[in-house]
Image (tube, rainbow, N blue to C red; front, side, top):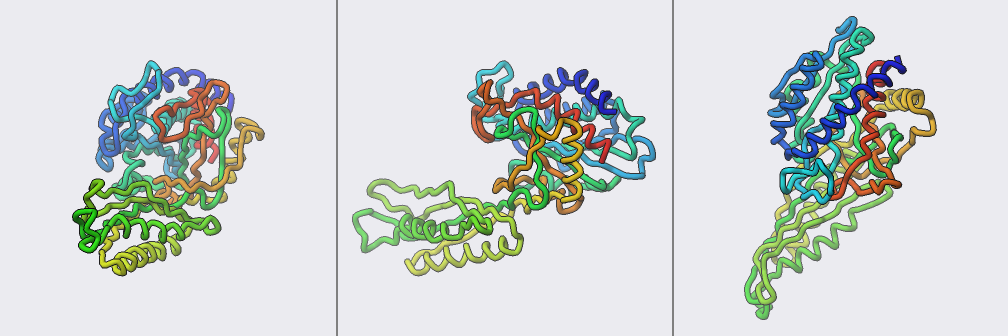
Length: 387
């Protein structure tokens, strides 16, 4: 079986690269993935797979039934959306859409899962149960595409026994895979603060309640919430007060993110943020409204499913190419699936130091070593068949 998978990986690798480059050059933002989802549906149909479209707007689900289709179901997931970034790479398949770029590798994820679908379609007689291919919108933006897909029934009819997903990792060299059991990626909430003071001429201090100063005090106080021992990160990336050298504005807006690995602490921190911000503002005769947009939960890899996936990876590509990786303060909406179905979310090495492929995710120069696709369409097929 492994030899056949490797042969099919060689066969479909050129097409998968072609698809990745096509998707890369035509990036679509969250909830706008109409061309991408149409391409996905077309390729799945070509592979002889049952296709369902329009799931949570632009989502696509493929169903491949093997022997005894009701005996079990393995789900495989890919995300399709791009980021609002101007690409700086000088490549033939550079983004054609200004201000939009696949800077997080979702083009790789989508093309990869299409390649897996092609391989497994040719191995239909060796599938026990059913394989469900989930292509979802909007991983990058709240509201989450994963949550919307689940609400639309993506984990029903049939209900998966296990679900697998992956994310490209430029910090891992091509040819390697990374695994982490248990709590793997943090929850993510968006924090929005609006400080209202009293603006006016900057020289007339007696008439002012400067929201910039109040906002500064709030920011400094909130930084004490971050704690590497829990771990918790509260980080702010935007502060905007539309004044001038001699104009104090009435309002300052602040935006940041809260990351955490404990749901109880997470909810407690929501109240703590609100309490600190409001009390500091009140003390200065200002007000602060706190809006917390609750985002993705903690991503929890099932220990048993992940341990088996790691063993299968070692069997497929060798022990030396399978890495134990640490938890990450980054977040992923695959987390929603992990709270419904035993799951494993692993990392695919796409970096290549010798070729200069080292740029990080969410940067305008991000790229991948496409040889990672040959490895992973084979491994994910192996994983689906052996799980």
